[in-house]
Length: 502
Image (cartoon, rainbow, N blue to C red; front, side, top):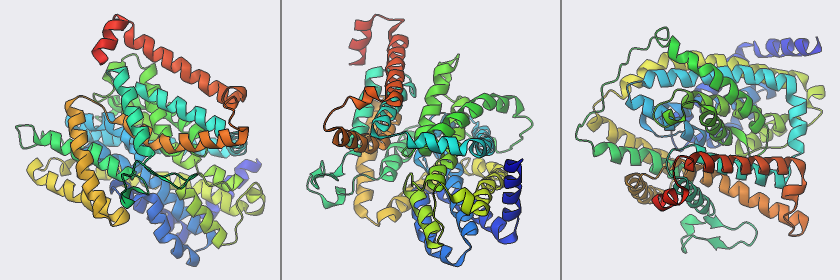
């Protein structure tokens, strides 16, 4: 009964004109920056932070949170339509979503992404309300050893993301790890793999990598086709006629929601890792895994559900523990501090109105997002029915503006050009860049926590196997690896397959 009263108090708090308006502003801006490459929720929140001086703390938190999880919706749009992920978490959505678009099912893919995100947002919120204290306690039990094991588990599972050679997937992961290590070594202060260029001291931006390996490489591949136009797609969107196909997303969405919530609660987890893990899990349990990568609707629903629930769950450690789990939550924590609100275990007791209004606002925000996004599906599909000779210059301009806006650096544009050429050659060699992207994202997390673990243990790596949670994650990673190897080679002679891989 106390829980119900608290939720009702949250509804009363949110249901004011200013809070509803700012909730809509937040999710609208989030959708827009999710579509635009290079802007990102962190930069947007940083730019809007001064505005929160003039807002009540509840309204400020509602708007900032709306931008964050709204970006997960918007990131899927360009990922599906033009293979250009607006957010890191949308890389996985592009695997099957863009293939669906090329098959004339762009509307179905966009509708599946919107509905899966909506389902995850609503159900994920229920899980957060019921389990927030327990989930926050679980997050506290994660130390450096657990994060190392989690990252290893994620990297090994990423081999399930793509079909084809196991050794090629492992090679792509290693390339991604190496690219993620470019820049200044935080411990020693020395530069690594920067080749003496000051422009690489801050490392390679994920925006540069994603635009080069996904968007521009896709354009270069499309321009090789003799037909100068893409297939004309059906821009008429009828959800009723899509009903049989959309029923297939229920199971993947539920599983993606559960996985996203569990991973999202962990610092370093969040939307990106949740999406990768959900896709790998869905492909693993499917009776027809060969469909994944060729336009499986489940491959759109699972990561979209996971990234949305993961993004929302990622906000809980910030509120209940006072632990920022990334750049976005650090900015939101700063916004609370501006208003004299101390995040931590006592926030539910001392600021119950703020906490429950924040939780309820995510419900309302998800309703606003699905109402906002579903009517736009037809508009987005009509956009890609434009002749490709007219469309690709606009996409290139879009990419260049997005990349340049991050650091105002022409060097980033030159890097995009060079990496796009590499990505095109990789496509010619049938090398999939998705494992590379996950290696790039998880590389810094893996390195940082290995160093922390060894520093705490005096150079002893045994905590990886002596701490229970870490040991379980490593055991799961080994089981997944053995399962991948067995399924990969069971139909062919092992030596013959290894020779083919090379």
